[in-house]
Structures are given as structure tokens and as C-alpha cells.
Amino acid sequence: MPGSVSPHPSPSPTVTEDAPASPVAVAGPAHLLRVTLLMAGSCLPILGAVLIAPVLPKMQDHFAAVPGAEALVPLALTVPALALALLAPFAGVIVDRLGRKRLLIVATVLYAVFGTAPLWLESLGAIIASRALVGVAEAAIMTCCTTLIGDYYSGRQRVRYLALQTMCASASATVFFVLGGAAGAAGWRVPFWVYAVSLLLAPLMAAVLPAPAAVRAAPAAVRAAQAADRSTADASAADGSGAVQARRPFPWRQLGGVCTLTFFGAMVFYTVPVEMSYLLDDLGVTDSGVIGAATAVASAATVGGAVAFARLRRVPDPLLPVVLMVCAAGFGVMAMAGNAALLVVGAVINCVGTGMLLPALLTTAMSRLAFEDRGRGTGLWMTAFFGGEFVCPLVLLGGEAVVGSLAGAVGLLGGAAAVVGVGLGTLPGRARTR
Image 1 (spheres, rainbow, N blue to C red):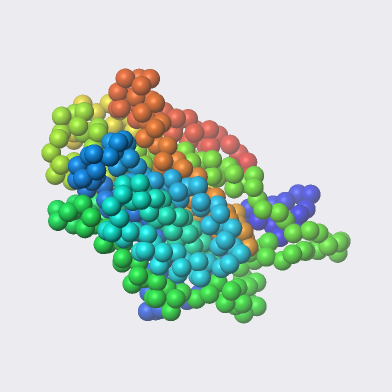
Image 2 (cartoon, rainbow, N blue to C red):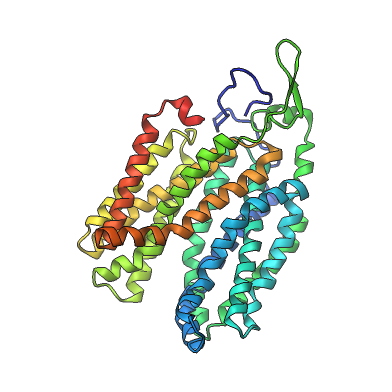
């Protein structure tokens, strides 16, 4: 983003091979521990989303006498994502005003408090309320972790670690599902103990993560090298004639376009994790081991897509049409699959695309945000992403009502992804950047 308002603003900067160096060290034990903590924090919302899924039937049996338990028990799984989507923008504003590190530490501690609350609560309503508070903590944690990645790294490093964030989240989903199932064998409350792991992360974050204010106070040479990523940091700037111009306002229009695409991309991203078991069941596959294995293969493909994205040497914007077409192709194969093997092939193709889609969208959003706006912008992006996650099953349910089958609904979503991909591909490069 240009640092001043001019009659002919240049396109927003994107990641290139000549991008400025990161303001923190990118090697050594301290760097590895910093990255590990940011990735572990980014996995906590995934923990909240999938850990208790295997024990929902046991919860259903426990609260069978509660009116409306059939709808309320599944809500305990999904309400954190809804809370995260609704509150992420506010978390972003707080991040920018109070500081990333401080909020991250507080939210990580509260995550353990709210996450373990169902161990002691007897009311289903109280448990759902505690789960909503978990979503509040997740909104702060995810926004802070992603914002700190944008603060600490730039250029190729930023692309690499945003892709790594996607890889870790995808891989952890499979691990947490297995962990929740194993712990749930001892009782439906037992998996909630796992939320206490955040109490181990909080003190390490306090000790290891550098304050972004210190990062901004880097030597003058480093600050000059990062002008592309932080060009709106000054309150005013002078043009060629020496006139002083006002600081550019928050880039609502540019970020709005990215967030709209992210909302749609989240539906594409979550279709396979959410609907794979139902699609297999429609094909006659009911064995939970087979379903788990198929989901794990698809999850591994997502990780592979994120790895491929991290290794590409291109800016993210031109990749989005191609990535969406890959996702659409996978949906097409899944829609036409007449057996489980072909369904898994289609899911793998789709998940390779979604593994690239998420870091591409996030990197594109980050490239449009200055330091002072990065928390708020990240919060808005999180709202778009988790909002798309929440409506994904509802959209597919509506599509199923129209075409008569879930596979057909997946095919419709694939067609929509293809249309969006073609539409983006036909835009001129400058218009697509805007």
C-alpha cells in the first residue's frame, strides 16, 4: 500500500523474491521456538473445532432427557466457530490498540479455563455457554498468531510461515480427531482435559515472543528495507512537490474483495472435512476405520498443497484462479464418483487445491495491510473464513434439497468454484490486484 494518497496510486505490494528481509532472526534456537509457539497457538482453534466430535454421541446419551438435546449437543461443537467468526473483527481492533503479545497470552490462559469448564459443569446450557467463550478466546488467539507472523516476517519468509500455519492446522485436525476418540473411550468429559495444554504455552509465549513494538524499533536500515510492507506507518507524507498529504485510510475496498473471496474459499476448504463421511455413507461405506483413513488421506493432501504453495516462487494473486480450478476439478470427480476409491481420488485433488488456497488468500490479505492495520485486517479476514466454515454445511444442505443428493450439491459448489476461478483469471492483472 502506498504511504500517501496520490492521484495515481500504485498497486498494493505483493510478495516477491526481492521482498524486504524479516525484522527478526530467521535461524537459530530462538527462531525455531518462536515459530513453534506461533504454530502451536494457531492449532488451538482447530483443537476446539474437532476434539470433541468423536464423543458427541456419548454426550447425546448423557443429556438425552434435556429438551432439544438433538440440536443442542451438536451446537457444542460448532458454536466456537460461530463465536470466532462474529468476534474476530473486534479482536483485531483490540490487537491493534492493546498489543498482540499481551492479548495472546491472556487469551491462551482463558482458553484453558473455558475449555476445561465442561469437566465441572452439569448443565448442557452452561456447557454450550463455555464453548462459546472458547470461541472468544480462539478469536483472539488466531488473530494474534496470524498478525504476529505478519509482524515478524516479510517477503518469502511470510509466505513460508503462513503456508506452514495451514500445514500445521490441517495435520493437527487429524491428530486431534484421533486423540479425542481415544480419550473419549474413558468418558465423554475426558477429552476436555486436553484444553489445559494451553497453560503450558502461555508462559513460553511470554518469555520467547518479542514484542512487536521492539520489532518496529529495528535499525533504520531494516526499517527502510521494509518500506513496502509498512508504507502507511507514517501519519503523513510529502509528494513530489513537497506538499504534505494525509495518511491513507484503512483499505476497506481491497480487503473487502479478499474477504469476500475468502468467505467463498472457506466453503470450498471445509466441504471435504465436513461432508466426507456422509458422502462415503451414501456409497455404502459405514466402517468408521475406513472413513477415518479416507479423511486422513485427504488431510494429508491439504498439507501437501500447502507445502507446494510454500515452494512456489510466484506472488499469490495470479495463483488464485488456477488453485480454484484445481478445487473445482476435485469436486467434479467427487460428484461423479460411483465408488469410494474414486471419491477419495477426487477429495485428494480438491484438498491439494485447498491446501494452496488458504495460504494464498491469507498472504494476499497480509500484503495489503500496514503494521497499524494488520490486527484489524486479520480479524476481518478471520471473520470471513470462519463465517464461510459455519455456513458450509448449510449451503450444501440447500444444494442437496435442490439437486436431490449431497454429491450433486458438491458438484454445484465445484461449478461455482470454476466460475469464480475463470472470472478471476479473465481480470487484468492490475484489476485483480485491486
